[in-house]
Length: 310
Ligand code: FAD
Ligand code: MG
Image (cartoon, rainbow, N blue to C red; front, side, top):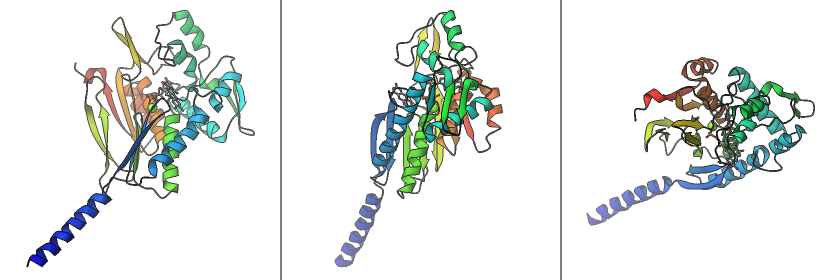
């Protein structure tokens, strides 16, 4: 009898141990693209693969990197760029036309004027805003597909891929994971998340932050889906009781005031989620929901000023 109990005990502990071993998640994080990139996966190779791919994309598309395609283009106004930069900037133009100009990557001069690039926030004079508005408009970007040439029509124009390139970087990293046969991983690039596969058979949990208080507003359970949140609570300043955040209305040159404080978009790819969350933040609920009709497989969680009673 004792032998039998010992035998059962061994089997139990083996399965428990083996089960626990199988349930091990490898987590790692690194500061890249101005945010913390967090990777969790049952495969310990995942983080290294993600960081390497994000670094490659950052070196191509970051306006903070001297010799990136974006920085070279912002300096000269006319450049032959990599096929990937061409792809992302043309996708940005698609979202610009679909969102009636609410999504606009040419707003780098405004980001700079208001101090959001170096985090030294300032309320600019109206004259300076009016001058910057002359440089805004993705329709002022010309593409020559024959040689990947991009040209700005107005001297002084600059682009900022802050609202689309993180999504592209996450999508590219997920592709690399799949190429390495890794099908379960959570990639979080500063509220730009991709849930690859599942977590030991259960969906990944993605929390939506409460835009005004500690804690969470909601919890999403997702598999093979992308999530992006744009909000007015990460990069902002308050002056005379008014909050000015880093997402701009390209028509006014002021930080968007649509009544929305946070938009979370859930869809199949991170680039679309990234761009749509910004566009809807600028458009507001009604026009934002109108834009979503053009994107069938998209879910959205909108939190408005009136939803958050302080
Ligand atoms: P989103 O809503 O996704 O994007 C908002 C950002 O997009 C704004 O910060 C602005 O840059 C731009 N934007 C504002 N209004 C609009 C609009 N109407 N349409 C389109 N775009 C708009 N930050 C650093 O501090 N240091 C870095 O070195 C740095 N490197 C980066 C490199 C890359 C490749 C990328 C993609 C981003 C990097 N960033 C860096 C972060 C970037 O500056 C933004 O702060 C960040 O991308 C905002 O993302 P979000 O999801 O919070 O907001
Ligand atoms: Mg985003």
